[in-house]
Image (cartoon, rainbow, N blue to C red):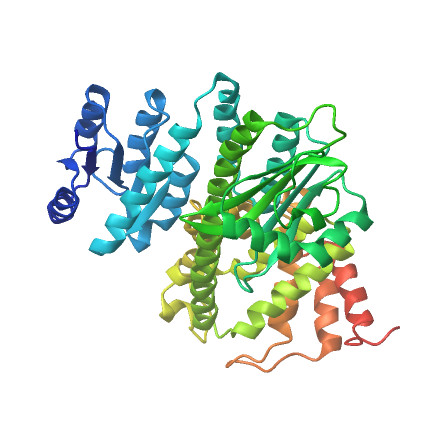
Length: 486
């Protein structure tokens, strides 16, 4: 039997040698190259079962390699080899269609597992897609695999499942990663009462039966009922397919589809179609969860860096969160959407990230700064925006961070924007930041009395601050009882 051929691209000779030795020993035909361009040529001339590629390489990086490969080969599974410092690029690679990634330094077991699972997943997909009726699902796969927002993805999976199978009802249940319990994730066509009954009385038993069988179950009214399913609501009125969703042999959920009446019940070809769709859905859900974990990892790192920046400027973690809290209060008072509010919250937490680049002797100088030193300070908003440039989840926060030191009269920095040209989030954070600074104790002065703080905000309305936002903050302070009513 011909060995499966694997190509490994990495500019580190040690990684290439280790990968070749491990994979050769377990029966693969392994070819290696340290040159991305050479790897692309090899892939165009020979048939490989799997590609492993490093991200950070000279001349051409791993993302560019993936893009070239995907231009003419949509099927080959790709595993990314990456270090901690390139996780943001790993996320982009996943969105380009990579199946997973290996984090350096990897163990023999991790490499073997990643390769085995990628190849097995590909084999299962190829084995399942046998009929021309299933061909449209290739396009469906691209549609769902590119969605990394879990909530949107679940809705999309239900929409596609209903569309492709002409189902009247659909349910998607997922196993909660924290509690391990099966929970309702998305549904279509159910009445509130019927979905509550299913969730509260039958879901655990349904999950147990399906996970035990680990195969799709077809229920057709009038035909012998699979054992245990006679108690599930709707089995006498609906033809149904129950599809367990699994990843690496572990159940992650259930996709249930139903058609009303006995005239057009589901058939075995429908089951096969749902099997393929279920495999794609499970892979997409896994990718979305991975994306969210990577996103959370980024945010944890960024917030830590932000805390370091604030600590350099005599701030504490509490002050940073206070600015975010006041900014969120103002944004909600303005009636902004929750997405915009969250964006402003993140920008507020990270607004002074660029201060990491400012030397301590300037940042902590007790006396007046020289013009040269002020020029260094003025660069920190632009530096902060630049630092998060490659982080996709923070793309909408960049301009807010860059412009949070712009003044309403145009005398601020870095770009001298004025009035409504300054992003709304930046105007909000500018007021919240100034308020927090004046009400906080600093090594060089004590917190100002509240009446003086309010006077400063009012005096500089229309000069440094947006007057409307100042008024909103004052109303919020009154509502919180921090400021007495006039």
